Length: 58
Image (tube, rainbow, N blue to C red; front, side, top):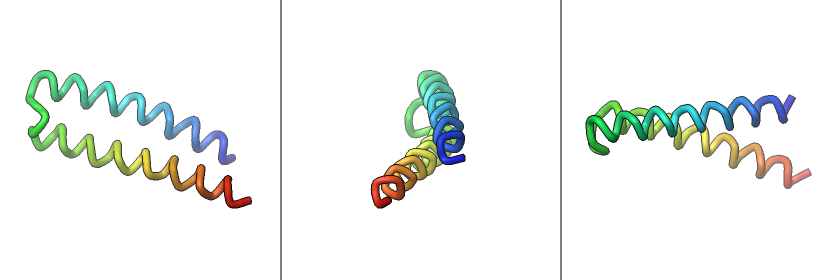
């Protein structure tokens, strides 16, 4: 269950990074769409960090 969630988050993070890179290349890093993807990416990264923290506390 946890492993599946981490794998899904990891795939999603990779996709968001690619999308953000392509969008930033075309629109610039300060474009609102790039910033929105960055926020979503940061949220997903924080989720993985929280899962790792929870696993270490076992």
